[in-house]
Length: 144
Ligand SMILES: Nc1nc2c([nH]c(=O)n2[C@H]2C[C@H](O)[C@@H](COP(=O)(O)OP(=O)(O)OP(=O)(O)O)O2)c(=O)[nH]1
Image 1: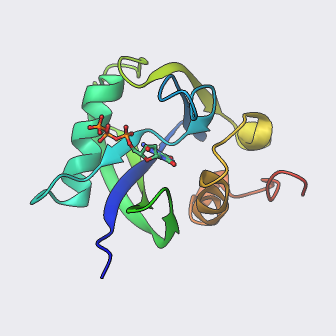
Image 2 (image 1 turned 90 degrees about the vertical axis):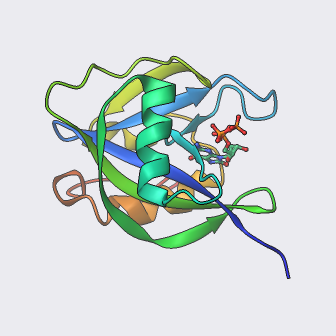
């Protein structure tokens, strides 16, 4: 039986915008955009991993919200889970400290303006249906 290892991606929302992060490594992923996050460590809960990864990668103090239903396959043995998150009051603004070389806050009409990792596109589509205010008027994805 193949064990899945969960990668948590944060749908970090602030002021009606979603944060996208551009990967700086490894070479095959560099330049593509993703939800910030990372691997859940053994014995760690997903929401704890999310808070840890966002602190390490972005320097923010984040509060996890809800898990977006679904699981998206990445390179085996990894699978992507998405959680909504927001910045706690007083959190520093995100900076690309680790793993990323650019960040963008995307408004409603900008979600599909960046070159998301292919495997993130279905996860994002599902996430957008769960994001309340961000949902309205969002196009359905590349080619839609
Ligand atoms: N964080 C994140 N990783 C993603 C997404 N989509 C996607 O394919 N991945 C892949 C990239 C990596 O191969 C893997 C996550 O690894 P990572 O490098 O972000 O995780 P990490 O910080 O725990 O890494 P590590 O250096 O400790 O091994 O999942 C996504 O939306 N967010």
